[in-house]
Length: 474
Image (cartoon, rainbow, N blue to C red; front, side, top):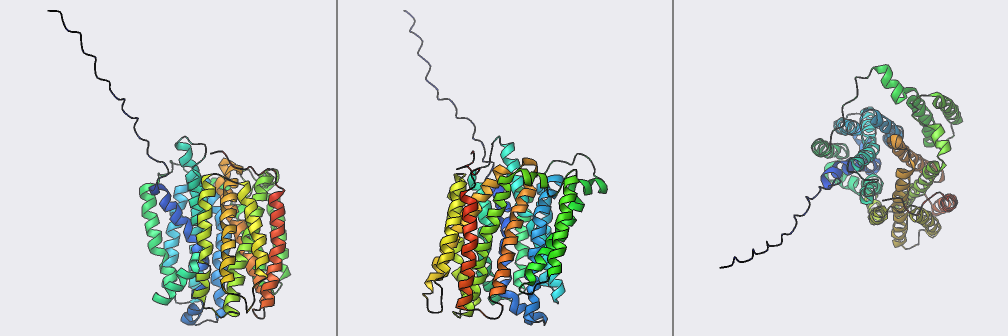
């Protein structure tokens, strides 16, 4: 009997390739986003607690402004400093150190019995929260490099912007609720559990930095950090910010000291081997310098709304601080909705110009405000400036990521936030001058005209910058 032909072997489906874990999963991004949100939230969280604090520690309400100033000064100086330290010691180490400072600052403020201790607490919180954003940028870049990606997913940078900037207006309603329910000490204590969660998540889900090549001596550390440059930057910035905070009283000597210190800093940094503020890079990389300028101007307009319009609705329309804070919530919601799709597509030029156009529209719209105007118009304005916040944050951060040298990304990212703080402090000075004697319709209209001027400059800087790409490489 002839042998039957051998039956063909059944076809086999090739096994699917093993799935590659997402390098930017929620485990990696959660502590970075959480840490980055602490600085903007704390910048506005204190606003509703100032009067209760004054009563609680027995000081005039005017002296509690030092609590606002302390965090702004600390943050404006610490943001690029933390970035520089992260480039030397490793971003995860600096991020963890910052989170620990936030916890210590929260405990210090929560148990404080006097204004001086509260100021120390706010400085610690400012220093600690300032470590998050520049180190997060470095950790994201390192993660992308290790995963073989040219750039991280746009959604990751977008999430960082939502956490690091768009959450600023959340501080007012959160602070109002905390003070109303638990008292003013809760705005300090609230930092502790958030810091502990961020600390545990970072230790668990963020890869450690590599070992330092060798033990560093103090002199070598000072040279690599450019300690003299950091000290000069801090001194020049403090003199400038104190001058702005003192307005409308003009202490010209502070401005003079600041100018002299800035000139001395430039001369020092031109000779430094590892400059903290790379003046040559800023002079040659004009695209990055324009990004800083655009972001500072956008934040100036944005914070005029946060400070000026908020004071106007309280002083002229009679709203409470909590009600005024709730009016600003649409700004956060709109900015969050804008940041995500813009960042996911790595868009730059369109969002940057859109932010400038929205600034002009919002500034002109502020002229409509009056004691008899429809209160809903304030909500419309906050929606417009939500567009400003979202487009400016996403577009300029994406531009910075592409423009900054890879080995200086931490310092560059910190400087972006510093320019934002200078813009916010300048806006506080403007509202302080305009509303020096009283909050009036005429005052808010004057603020609107100032905003129109700033917005037009922002629009020109954005439209005329031909180096801005439509989008960056994915």
